[in-house]
Length: 384
Image (cartoon, rainbow, N blue to C red; front, side, top):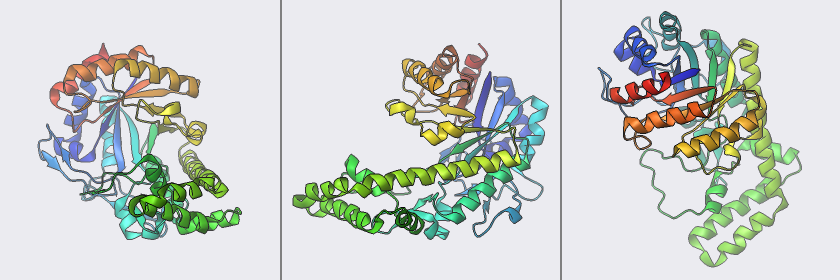
């Protein structure tokens, strides 16, 4: 059974690839899921010999790119690349000694570093403000960049699978650095703030016979009324919901996202036909239909799902997703860190529940964040 471990290049670099991969293999894992393109963070690393606190470079890739593949948007290359170092290729070479497979864990549209530099490429609220944490799948430069990125990754190394994170429109709330949302947002306001009205989406809507400007003004007015004109809030929201273009515009954004996903998958298949494309299903146990868009299901070679709050939720989610995926593999996910697992026994129990559910594999998050006792407990559960 596949047993993958999400891993960062800075942990492998600090420990030394041979030492780290030896530990990972001995613990019972069969694959290393390397963050090949990743976002910013503030991470406590309990067993890293060089850094116990680490701030990753925002929006960086962890391999040496072929710059000729890219257009206007060029990737940010991590400082861990260079002077003879290339984490993706180094891992591909060293993991063979330990019988491990290589999986490329790839963050797509979530890239604040690029968003800051190319605000026109971001999704935009009804007020015209760019949400820099999310690139827009409608923008041709974004499509070109992500297709070049995935093609570059699967061409650089012998990648068994590529895990595509955030290949979709992201919501308004993100947990940005020092994020302050000083007003209570209800579900309707969260939805309206997450609808993108960027230039390319507006142009596409106009070609489809939708009036996006009228809808955009109505959305902005409904939000403003909810915050500043409470007597008008209900009627302003009704104006949005009763506009037939509201549903049509939402359907268009889904179509745009589906086209984007299809283009990514075509690029991967063209460069590496044998690489399995894996998507992330919804992470919350309460999500309807496991939170999987139809265009994910259509193109997925495999599907990852987690993180479940109980063993019973694991078994329920596994059954639902297996029925959706048919004969394609389903991979359960375990977040073996606090607050999901404050004690190693909790993580080990989730692993056993996924195994009992007869999923095709289990992916564990995350090597650098886990304590040594946690790694041992999860490994023992995988091997039992």
